[in-house]
Length: 77
Image (cartoon, rainbow, N blue to C red; front, side, top):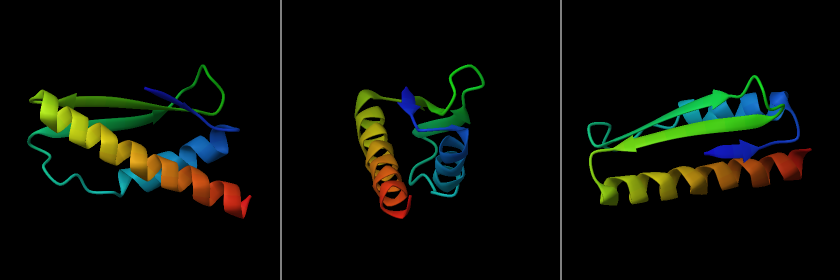
């Protein structure tokens, strides 16, 4: 999944914040965050899960956290 930000600095900040957020059930859901080197200001999220339900719940939780990060950045910027 590609999540656009204004620049690499904000994408890197979001990546660092998300990296500290523990995954409740790491045996059933994994996510990897990377800042794209090709697309300026793009956070890449790679999700994997053992079943559809774990994927749906994990992606939903991750997107909720990313939305909170974006809203906070908008308020502080």
